Image 1: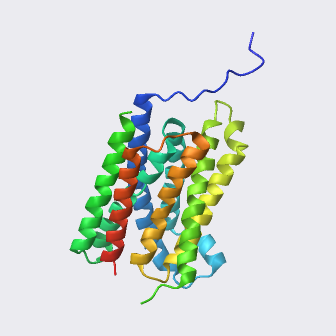
Image 2 (image 1 turned 120 degrees about the vertical axis):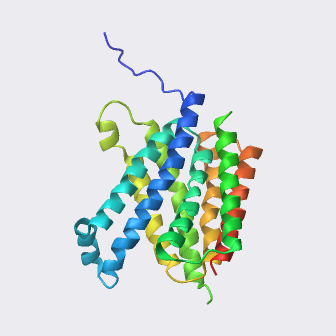
Image 3 (image 1 turned 135 degrees about the vertical axis):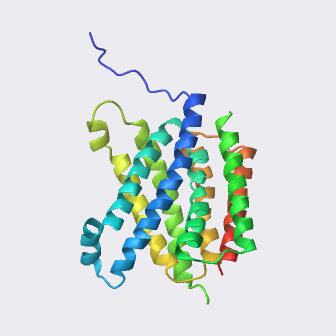
Length: 138
Length: 117
C-alpha cells in the first residue's frame, strides 16, 4: 500500500554531494565560456541582422545553435547542483567564468593581456578556491 | 570613454534580477522528483530560467557601451545579493569563509575591469 501523503522533503546536506555540486558548477563555467566563444563566432555573421533574422540565426547558424545548446546544458547541470549545495556557495563560483572568458579573448580574439588583468584573474581564482574548499568541507 | 548612467542601471538591474532568478532555480530544483510533471509544470524553474534570460539580455545591452572597469564590478554585486537572499530564503549562514571568498572575487573582478580599459 502506498502512503497517501509523500514523506516530508527535509533537506539533509550530504558532504559528498555538496562536493559534487561544487565540482559540477566549476566544470559548468567551462561550458559557459565555450558557449560564449561559439556565440561570439556565430554572432559575427549577424552583426546587422534584425530581431527576426537573429532568432532564425540561432537555429540555422551551427556555432550559435551549439553555443545556446551549451547554455541549456549549463542550466540543467546548475539546477541539479543547486539541489545538493548551498546557493550562497554555488552562485559566486560562476565567477570562474571570467577567467576562462579572459583567456579565450586573449587566445582566440587577440585581446591584450596586462598585469592588472593577470592580477585580477589570480584574485578571482583565489576567491573561488576559498569558497570551494570552505564550502565543500563543512 | 565615459559610461552612461543608463548602461550602469541596465547592468545593475541585470545582476540583481539574475541573483533573484537563482532563488527560483534553487527552490524549483528542490521540487523536482521522479515524475516528469515535476519538471514540466515547475513554475519556479520557469521563472528562474526566464529571469536568467532577462538578465543576460540586460547585460548585453548594458555592456554594449560603457567602460568595463565600471560595469564589471556592478555585475559582481549580484554575488553579494545572493549571500543575503540565501540567508533570507534558505537559511544559509553567512560565514567568514563566504565573505572572504565573495570579497576576493569582487576585488579580482574590479582589477580585471581596470585592466580592460
